[in-house]
Each structure stands twice: as C-alpha cells, then as structure tokens.
Amino acid sequence: MAHQSNLIADNIEQYLHEHENKDLLRFITCGSVDDGKSTLIGRLLHDSKMIFEDQLAAITQASKTSGTTGDTVDLALLVDGLQSEREQGITIDVAYRFFSTEKRKFIIADTPGHEQYTRNMATGASTASLAIILIDARYGVQTQTRRHSFIADLLGIQHLVIAVNKMDLVDFSEQRFNEIVDEYRAFATNLSAPDIRFVPMSALNGDNVVNPSDQTAWYFGADYEGKTLIELLESVEISRDQNLTDLRLPVQYVNRPNLDFRGYCGTLAAGVLHPGQEIKVLPSGKTSRVARVVTFDGDLNAAYPGQAITVTLEDEIDISRGDWIVSANAELPLSNAFMADIVWMHEDVLAPGKLYDFKLATRDLSGQVSAIEYQIDVNTLERHTTDSLGLNAIARCQVELTAAIPVDDYRTSPGTGSFIIIDRLNNITVGAGMIRGAADAREQAGATDWAAFERDLNVLVRKHFPHWEANDIRDVLR
View (cartoon, rainbow, N blue to C red):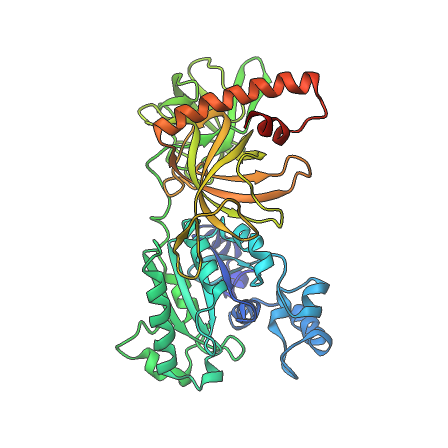
C-alpha cells in the first residue's frame, strides 16, 4: 500500500512513475522482549495512513479478545498475526510490511525479542540497511538489546536508530533519556556502525513516531537532533552503502535455450557490470569480455547490485553454478580455510570437527569448523575460550571446506562474504557466518593436508565399514 496522494486521482501515470523511482529502505525493529516493536510498526502504519479501513476494523475486533492495551486498539496485531503470537502477546516469526511516504519506500521486518528466536532476528537483519533498536525507558539497555545490536553490527548494518520507547511511563524525563543514551554509547564504543541516532518516543500513544510530541519539547531544542522517527527514516543516507567498486556475480544458472545462446544467470552482489568489460571467472581464473547484459525487459548498458541478470561472454569458457564472475584485475585469495564470525542458531551445540553442509552464495559444499578462536560475551564484548557453541552463541571460528573457494570479506561484499551452515542429517539451518578473511597461510597448509587425508580415508572406510560415522574415524586417528 502507498501513501495518500492526490496524484492517485488526478494523474495515476505520474504517480506510478514517481513511486517507481523512489529509493527503497529495508529496516528491522529489534530489541528485548516487550520493548514495543510490533506496536511501533503498527503505529507507523496507522499514523502515516497506511492501514485500510477493513484492516483497522479487523484488529479493532481482535483487540477485544487478544489485545494487551485495554480498551484501545492494539496496533501490534497488525504484524503479530499468528495465533500463538496473539495468545502469548509476543513476536515469534519475522513479519514483513511495506509502506511508502512522499520521499521513500520502506520494507519493515518485525523481528522477535525472545532469546530462543534470535535466529529469526538474524534472518530479518540479513537484508536490512538500518536497524531500529527499541529500549524500554524503564529498564534501559538489556541483554537482548546488546545481543541484537551486536548481531546487526556483525551483519554490516551501518545505521542504527535507538528508539527509547515508553517514555510516557517515565513522565518523558529528559534525564532518563540521557542516562540511556550514555549507557548505550558506552556499549557502542565496541561496535563498527558509523551512524547511531537516538529518539525518545511512545509507540503506544504515537509520540515522536510520525508526529512531533508536545511532551518532549526539550528534544526539539538545540541540544538534540529533534527529528521524529519517520523523519530519521526518510533522511538517512543509504545510497553510499552499496559496494559499486568490486564486481561480484555468483553464477546461479547456465542458460542454454538454443545453440546460438549461452548465458550465465545470477543476481549481481556488488560492483557495476557493463558490455565490453573485462572479467575473470573464479576459481578457474579464465578471462574474457562481457558481450551482453540481458534481462527480461531487454539488454542493459549497465547492471547494478541487486539486479537479476544474464551475462554473455565473447569467449567460450567452462562456467558452472557456483563460479564467480569478477573484474579481470580482482585479487581474491582462493582457499578452503578462512576465518569467520558465526552465530549459532540451534539447541544442538556446534562441536569442532563435525561435518556440515555450507551454502556460500550459489555454491554448496561440505566442511567443518576446525577451531573456535574465541566466543564473544554479548554483554561486555569480551572474548572467552570455549570448546563448543550453544544456542545464540557468537564466536570467531576457523572453517575448513572440502574445496577451495574465493574468500571475500563480508564487510566488502555481504552477498559473497556470508554463508549458512546446514545439518547434514535433518537439513536444518543451524548457523550463519560472516567471513573475515582467509586463514593464516601456515595453518591453512596444514589444514589442507589433513582435510585431503581425511577425505581419502573416509572413502576407504565407508567402502569397507559403511556403518562407521565420521566421528568414529576421527577418534581412531587420534
């Protein structure tokens, strides 16, 4: 649904043209339990006239049986649609909503606050450019506040809006707001996000969400930025966040409809691609030149990150799913061992040496976490040694794969510098990782020899002893 505009009635073609050319901001709401994330989104949609009358009537009726706000309409029900969510008054799954204003289009991801659903929060944050981190003004910075902030920072989100919510319950105290700002800034000294903003508000009553509040006259003085939440969302600069320098096109599919056409399909992860550009294919290292950039709507003079394209080359090169197309002068290390920050998302612990399936960009292969360098305490960001990772743990690890791949730093190119870990037995995603660089050359050489030896041994043992497991083989070697 779009914002209310007279152009819809007067000149629909001009309205659609203007709407199509607005930039899009993806953001998430996160924070601790009951900080008001769903209520905030409901308030954003309501006060910006983004709710149809039948939707408002439906949640008004639902508020009588499932609401948590007394006689008033519970706007959180706009995004908490699951029966179990309404029964418990919590968010479980990630809920997405679209809306727009005159200046920008938005996609919101409402993420859970409960610790056991941290994996859903990481899912919502993986495609976001901005995170709204809510803090209950009564309780200040909590463990989940720190955890979600740290995960958002790990995932490369550069813009954080700290929404100090429920200010009506502390009489809109400027002193309390400043205490929370100071508390969060002290924690944020260890974060990499360059843009952090603070806004006092009440999502339940609408103070400083879309409309300025008379209760916080001090916020609109010279000492503060003095913008409502929607003004911050409309004005944040995201055009420079994309990497337009380092070309990255993971090949997803080889399109061969007839003898006269061979194209390589994929979504451009980073950089700009245009006809005539010299490219290199990894891991083979073969070079060529782009002949055409093809889309459903016709050929392009240039393609940008996020566009799904088909590329044809001037030379016949052996390219398959999982290969990368990069700039001809790109210098990317090829390695089967790299360092990564891993967020563990399952009750079954991560134990070094266990075999998992790894999905990186468009490539699937097997591997293991060979070592845990350190685990990070989300409260203090201190580093601790550990032998395993439990649910919601975050750690710097060394990963070994069964084949060499291009190693891309996540902060350079999130699309090619990230991966997920999948349990080989039940096909459940158990972890997510952000690559931080290739492993040390000496460690890598030793790890590569061991990995090759273990693979060969696995083949022999499974041939003669099919009932043995990988851990049994490893125990015998030790």
